[in-house]
Length: 241
Image 1 (cartoon, rainbow, N blue to C red):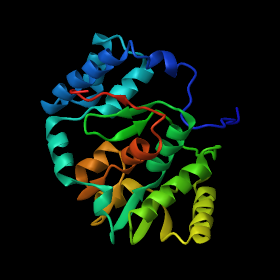
Image 2 (cartoon, one colour; image 1 turned 180 degrees about the vertical axis):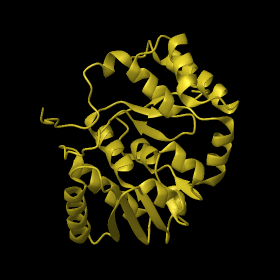
Image 3 (cartoon, helix red, strand yellow; image 1 turned 90 degrees about the vertical axis):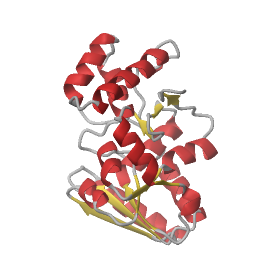
Image 4 (spheres, rainbow, N blue to C red; image 1 turned 120 degrees about the vertical axis):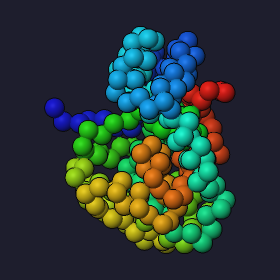
């Protein structure tokens, strides 16, 4: 069946699954899962235990998994985080699909999650194929304006080459960068995560394993939503929310 979605991140049951009545249980589930991860338990078995304990649906379990991390990861990520206000003159490496789909979801009113580490994550999924939606150009424009305002010297975007239509997205991004004189390069590689983990530049991503390995990172999506897209209020799943 062809993909006919016009918006990113929309799901017919999200309003019900992430309604206010469920948010305390989701927050508690994140706390329990993070406790298990801190003590070295594996994610799959821990997530099943916590998901069963709180009778979570598959989509709610995915949200909890994306929002959890161990105490060790939390402390390390906080130590290596930099603010967008500290990026002037820097070269940044951007997890392309990770950042773009989150801003697309934010613009379309999709569910947004603030994880334990403060990173902003969405509930969209591409399943190996990227489809341009109505929010794609507005999202790229917003990102371009934000990165330009931060005074970044060079933005190196990294896209997953195996993802269908990644080449078309690259063309769109390069055309926009030329039109606005943004200092962008767009790279198609088999595994962007490997590039980002080994980067000596500031990395822009919300991918947990990448955040655990990269030298420095910035929480750009969260800052954009907080300062520019206040009408879409994320669901805060942190312990102290």
